[in-house]
Amino acid sequence: MRRGRWLFALIALLTLAADIASKLAVVGKLENTDHPPIEVIPNVLYFVHTRNTGAAFSMGESYTWVLTGVALGVIIVIIRFARKLASSGWAVALGLVLGGAFGNVIDRLFREGGGVVDFLAIVDPFDPPWPIFNLADSALCVGVAILVFMELTGRRIDGTRVTKSGSAKSKDD
Image (cartoon, rainbow, N blue to C red; front, side):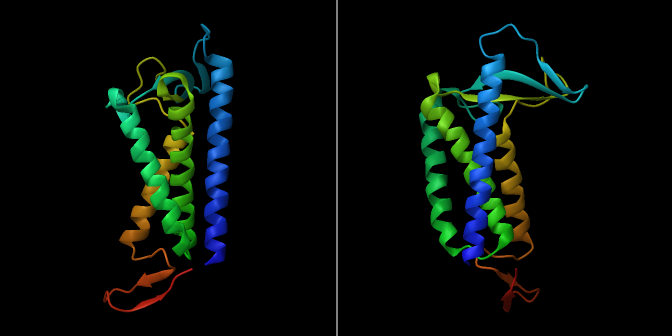
């Protein structure tokens, strides 16, 4: 159980640190400049600075404080769940979600206008096929995908695993 909590904390801190460092670099290089998008992988990945006060696809732009409150609630719930952690998979997933949520909440609370710094554009930096995003968003998506996988395969947060009969449990990892 202790190992799960340490892994969870490490993943959350690394995710948060990577998110903050990347946003500081992008803001330092691209904010308030006429710098064109930076091509990272030709015709695939670009760095371009933008701010998003809403959720995905910029929905709910006038609800910045509501989104902040929801994210803070998620953070509290995850920290409470962390007490039960005995599964490495759940620890990684919850660490990614926690680090990503914290990264975006920090932007909402401390950046002017509550806008989250987004900078990763896929395929086209001027008209990307989906929203411009950041490392925190990526961590949230990957973490949630892992959580869904863990749940669908019967792996529980306490390290047990539901068998095919659904009644017996055994220790997981």
